[in-house]
Length: 395
Figure (spheres, rainbow, N blue to C red):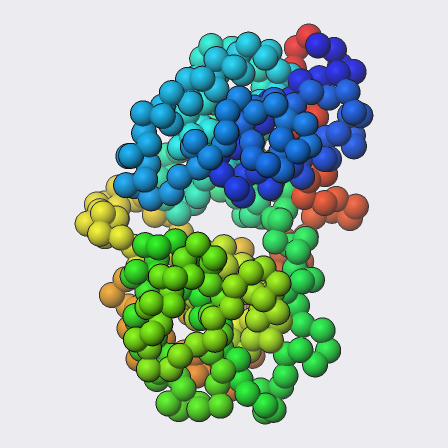
């Protein structure tokens, strides 16, 4: 192992991490040359670029409490297998990518057994919203943290977290596909208004929000009958969504696939969405929205305890609001998620109202708020931090 042929170990735990990891690998290879060796845990994209994966990433790529519990013995074995393999590979740097339950378990153990290996974390856990004490704990086993959101470096400074670098969000580089060409998004005074409905990307979210979203849509269309309702469905939940909307008074047009979703975003005049990354997609597309979220029974029972322990440290749970430092996007949580309240706000966004104008104006600031220095892409900015970590390692 030499400076000319470094070994980079990357550990991801799900599809989104495989996407980030593959783009990082491309940027690192462009900067270091073809001699770099990659090992770790990754999916098809990363292995297709030359990563030797210790096992199939699908072993640890699970969502939901019941699914995790069912596979817990295997996941625990994979954690220890990954740690042993990282130590054996003697990499110049270890990059852990998202999936903190898995990747951070690996990083902690690698740090104890091989403290000389630099560790870079890619994607910050949401310490600004939940369990802020994690930031200080991370500083003991993460040397450099790559943040996707521009406010996160300041959050980690205040919370005593690791050195944190804003490297941009992958959605920013894909924003053009979400923004309308001339004529795709009609004027509110012409043709039909298009309302997007986005009830979530997980079964639990859909189970909690789909019925109330259906009641909301019925109230909107009752007052604005020229509204077309479009629901972009995640493929693996399409059957559940179709079953749920069969009970709706107003039936939405269900679309699937990335291209159909992007086309719907380009046509949309307003949206009703579950809280999550989709709110940032809508914001980058310039689509005014109302955001709602219902936590599951476990976290609802903890809510009062959370207030006592100060686990929640932000006033908003909507990413564009946090990034812009505004409350322009209406947000509703738990008992506030009522059809009448949601419909009232949506009707304002589907007309030329002051509320719509304010939100459109605020969303127009998002590009500047998330912009990287000229000449930098997300993967390039991330690669530079990784390279600096390698260079700083004592030889």
